[in-house]
Length: 256
Image 1 (cartoon, rainbow, N blue to C red):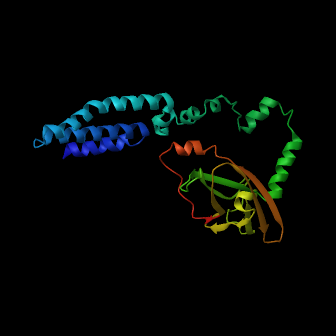
Image 2 (tube, rainbow, N blue to C red):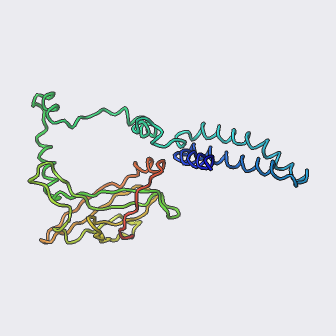
Image 3 (cartoon, rainbow, N blue to C red):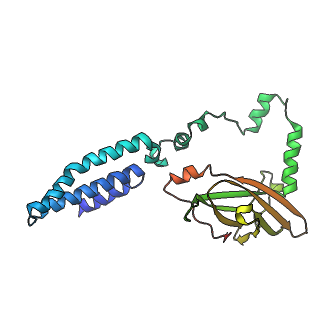
């Protein structure tokens, strides 16, 4: 009984990454084959020969396949949890990411280093105007590998609202000032406007695509005014999701 429990714990540990799953698969196949040969005394010699040849050849086949995987697809053999620092997992996907210059968000540190000079006030004004013009609304998106044939990802596109550290500017993300949000994705979607569904604290739609695209969102407010938002729906994070075992939960939004 204890050996069975130990095997179960070992199997769970191995199943945490692709490399472990491969190892578990090999052990099970080889173990069952050996068990059949050893326990089946009633088998004729003609019936045992294929099993014996399998036991002899199988390790070499596994070695060849494993060598091919290591040579050509070694990045797919690990999970984020295999790394002491999971940022190294992202760095492995694209080594150039870790080479990018780090820009600190420490306001006091940046002001001390610049001496209060060279601050692009015009850009600060433009940035503030964008927040005001959009009423703090922007387009957000998450994705997961598509379950639809011929599509690369299922994408969830929705409104997000900027929450400032200034408590006076904070507003609840209940979208009570929004009458409707309409999304436009281009000619592959028939050049149609898709009205977003409000579900809990989300207003959005879900769709599928095999390539990145530009998304537009027209927000109509209850006071009659409207604003047009845009965002490029990229697949950059899809590389990470494809290699993670914990997938993003599907959002209960409207298909389009």
